[in-house]
Image (cartoon, rainbow over all chains, first blue to last red; front, side, top):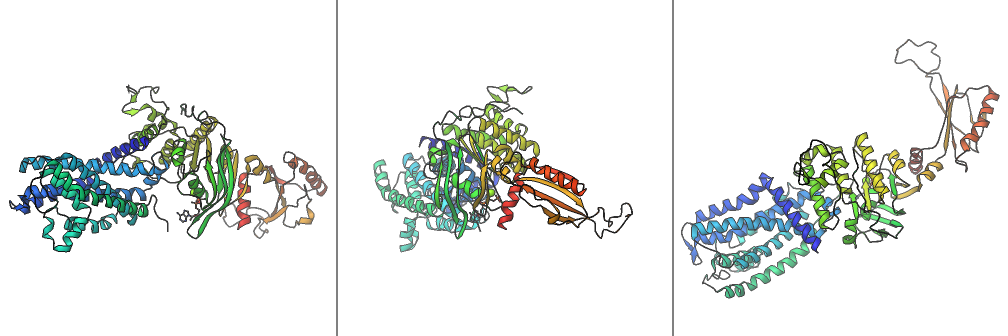
Length: 265
Length: 373
Ligand SMILES: Nc1ncnc2c1ncn2[C@@H]1O[C@H](COP(=O)(O)OP(=O)(O)OP(=O)(O)O)[C@@H](O)[C@H]1O
Ligand SMILES: [Mg+2]
């Protein structure tokens, strides 16, 4: 177990080094969500959404975008490319266990996400004067989100025959994340059943926990009224439950679909 | 090229157990296709075992089952007494693997790649004790690092002759250089068991010799090695035992001595003309010769113009080959020569280009494959 942790940390550091050396990844994964955030905030204008200024609403939803780019797309790409180039096979034939290899990638993605969120936090403070109200809640949301989307990425990489195809296989998930999650607009904009479905998607609970954690107000329902710290945690419980279920589901999917070696024939 | 103290700890780490690798009735299927069809062999501690065979014989498949990449379809496999799949955690730190083909992270430099592997090995409780670099004249050494490269890393690179490539990106290495890096990674943590799948394929002759030296040093320090190769001289030089595989089965196995001796000694010569038949030639050591008629073209051109490509260059002749497989492997060739000479004297025939040689692994290989086709 201790070995696994050491291995995972070392592999996560490796991932960060390699991301830093790859301009395509730097742009797609790190810059793109920030660019989109800037566009969305511009589009929102000054109008209030769910009791908060539009800018603050959008910026606290942007971590949902980042989960899509820095975690999901990034990992589908890297799992697929490494499998096809036989890097995964080499790693698995070396010291790290399967668990450590996966955890390393997840940890690297978490570091990227947290780095981006730190930038976002500064941005929020500068433009909206918001300081995060509940940092532990934000961190928990980030960790749960990364686990689910890393496992989902592992599963999707199994469906992706090569690195070029990854651009296409990630699209369905990305579309659902962009349209179905309350990133730039609240859930109740969606007509009845769609709203319920959206609430069950793995990105919605993360965004709601993040938004509540940043703004200190109830963003699980459409209310937006202020909550105590304890109240925030209680309100977050259903979201945490949904994420726990998703961890189970995506874990099984990853187990079933993930491939360590290129398929033959 | 120096060989730093690669494997001081190898032998000491595990006593007892005599067969480090045990394979019994191994079968391996890929869907409908059975790649390995019931093979058995053992590798004793401190020995090199060579798995030879045709392309697609199932060598890599066998290795990968032993390396724990996939469970055996049927049969038993044990490495250091452990199940390679279910006891992978215990096994992994004690095993070194050089895959027939394994990918590198192309954006890392050679030194970074070795550093990564060294770190992973240290994390697993197997510190890398190679040292080098410091003794090299003219190198700036600072706190154990040679111009930014760790000493143990430098030692590993020296072992395989890659020290000048330390700061080069892996994707820029040539095929043979990648193979050398591969070897460095496989032996880095002084493994007790080493799996080498065609380790010298693509290496130049000098690198191949270096690799042999590395393998021999490890073997002498107690590492057990399972090796596949298509270079028969490599198997002959390194292995104590070998097996020849074809289409999923082992067709010949034993010590190199045994296998080579079983291939028989050759006596070969030419007789002028093509009118010789079996009946003319003596039976030696209980075997009749194989005759091949050759040369001469139409055999009538008396004086071909010099340099004329179409001109027949040799007179017709009969090639005679005896393969002696008598029980006394040491003296059978000698014993057969006496009656042969007596026959030649009696006939007044000259044995042209007379050659006596021991059988080779290649003879065995060709026979095994030939029999199956
Ligand atoms: N993953 C796989 N799926 C299906 N068939 C496979 C797979 N891997 C290998 N095979 C088949 O199994 C047989 C044995 O392959 P293997 O790689 O073990 O041969 P080998 O003895 O190592 O050959 P070579 O000398 O060419 O390396 C081949 O016919 C190959 O096509
Ligand atoms: Mg092979």
